[in-house]
Amino acid sequence: MRRRSGDPDPRRTLPGVDRLAEAVLGRERGLPRWAATEGARRELAAARERIAAGERPEPEALSEAAARRATDLARPRPGRVVNATGVVLHTNLGRAPLAPGAAAAALEAGSRYTDLELDLGAGRRGQRLAAVSEKLALLAGAPAALAVNNNAAALLLAVSTLARGREVVVSRGELVEIGGSFRLPDILEAAGARLREVGTTNRTHPDDYRRAIGPETALLLKVHRSNFEQRGFVREVDLPELAPIAAEHGLPLLEDLGSATLVDLRSRGFPAESFAPARLQQGADVVCFSGDKLLGGPQAGLLIGDAEALGAMRSNPLARTVRLDKMTLAALDWTLGALLAGDAQGALPTLAGLTEAPEAVERRARALAERLAGVAGGALRIDVQSSRAPVGGGSLPGFALPSSAVALRPPDGAERLASRLRDADVPVVGRVAEGALLLDARTLLPGDEEAIEAALTAALKDSVR
Ligand SMILES: *Cc1c(COP(=O)(O)O)cnc(C)c1O
Image (cartoon, rainbow, N blue to C red; front, side, top):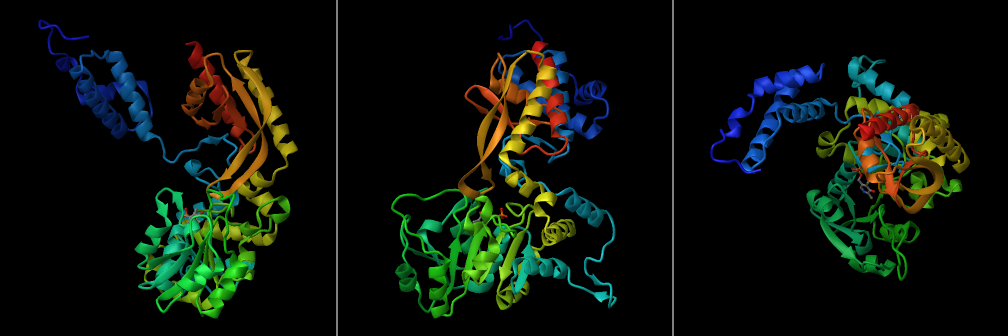
């Protein structure tokens, strides 16, 4: 509504920041004052713009909106959500959840003094990475191992160490973008190496590599495509063909595997290349991959392989800029210990989620459906349907896990219910398909059923208000 000329300037009627902040604190007890003040400041700025556009904000609506802003500001981030998408390694939801033991190890390392860089036996300075490198090498059956901040950093460190100022040969079919601004050519450039592309987008032959190798060549690099597949008229040079070429020319062969396991899941239908130790056996000198993808640990970049190459990486000054912090190190150490103990599926939520039998997932979906029907009391249609979800996290493209989901069909539309569930105290993230909100049971962690029940109860109360 436009302001008539006789009205006072409505901007004058807006409360001051302090008064609005007090109103916010009155509404939402327990909010910190900084958040109330900042929420009030932002809402007042928005209100001034609305007034300039001809609107007249209600005082009650003003404090409600400011309180919403303040609550959002004060919320711990990242905060817990329920992953009901079925995507075990959901990049937007933080990829692999840590095992409780790994999380406890991180908490202890973070809140206490530790022997991070102390050799307790000798009473002298020790190496912060020694224990983790040892466990990783043992597990992978590799001569040496190294862990850094993430896999992008692992690749940067490896290329910088092995090929700075020289050429890296990569197939055009493997010049990938992973998302979140990881683009292979950019990483090579940042590492100070020159990219020598070979082959075409869909076909690369062994001879393409041979022809590209010259006096400037320092490294052959193979990159896992991770988040897409090539089908049709395609030709890829895999390690068994590439390794002899590298050896013939005395060049190191590095593979960026992206996502990998250190337990052999090939018998469970996982693609052969997901098992990192096998890649070394097939001739890669060094393999790097993420700690928080299929491995099921904390964010880290893990390197396994040739002792001399890894030794050189360890003494590269870049290693210090990409080193792991003590909490991650503790979580990684615990995770590798669990893998060494041989009970990976029992201990690591990611592997449990990836390998749980479809029948067991269906049973959990049915129990959840019953529970939700109890709180919905006929307000919406609820049933269980089979679903398929990709693994996610740039892992195993083209591979989907059979699963079961609770399908909710509310009368006012699945999108609205999805949005209300995301708004809950513990937000629930599902996916909408064919008019239903699907809550996949495969990715639910202990305690998530209660959170979903609470979120649905609140959402239904909202919708009748
Ligand atoms: C995921 C991925 C990366 C990046 O790993 P981060 O741990 O996210 O840094 C690099 N290369 C490949 C092939 C990947 O799949």
